[in-house]
Length: 415
Image 1 (cartoon, rainbow, N blue to C red):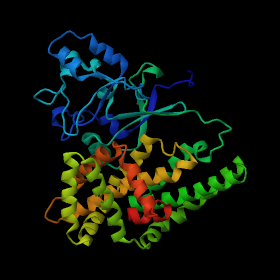
Image 2 (image 1 turned 180 degrees about the vertical axis):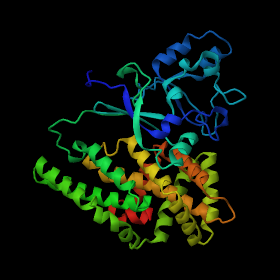
Image 3 (image 1 turned 60 degrees about the vertical axis):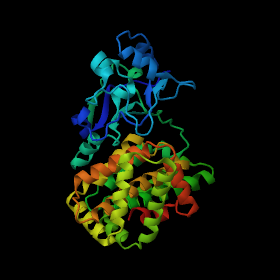
Image 4 (image 1 turned 90 degrees about the horizontal axis):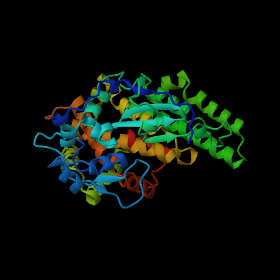
């Protein structure tokens, strides 16, 4: 299948150039509690291994999947229970496959995690999932960590790149407004997020206002027969309104003037958390975090809000970097107009949970609070929530039940 000329040069956030697995020093490594996907060539390679005891371990724990091969190339897998470590880890928590057979023997999943490869048209990209503690530390550490640079992919051709997300080239006659201008829309949202006069939460509300207008334009044009020129003009008008320097200059004051019902916010976010714990149990790190969050909620809430606000003023990039990275790795808004609001609200909910947990931790004045806590909350949330296929549908359904899955209540969630 031809996909156009492939460039071995990808766009990658700056932090990825510094990333290197820290191995046994990792505070919560990727070899515990997840199903490890094994691609077909790696499975076949493992079947031919004769070196003992590695050969016996491979035959015992690498099982061919009975269902169809997934898009991710999961031909076989190493299935682990929630708190079970990979059977190939040695006493030093290092991989015996890597040490015994070399890095080239690792599966795509093991060799590439936490990297996420994307292909948008003919533009390749690579970033990292912040479920990796070291990736989260690097991504949140500095103001320029998520700036995109050119990155030469270590692959000889397109077929060797384990793309996690693909979006085909945009056809000239693409009828969907959002898919037609997905990259431009993402660049506009990132510009808002990076605006120096807005906090991450304020920027997210402004992004929501912009997207609500774009969604309305797309729906109105579709209802009237799908005039592409009218749709493009409507989106241009939305950009003119919400990206206008004068508007952005006063946007923070507007967002701050909104009435944020904190009790409803806490009820929605803590309720979703408790339901997740009841249904899934969660990893030990997530359960430990929520225990600390519950302790923080017993303290006067204004203490946490003020302490988090002071931290945000000193380190405004931290939560912004999380948002930008999320958009880059997901190719938001690749799913088009129909899913635009739901996809954005899913991002907003994840951000709201991180901010909510951080505020609860900050409320405990007897405990340290700084960048380390932000890194920890981020990778724990991403690891437990973004990697759990059941969590976001459950949360979004809960919001629907409370009539809260609307852009209009975005400020209530993230404020």
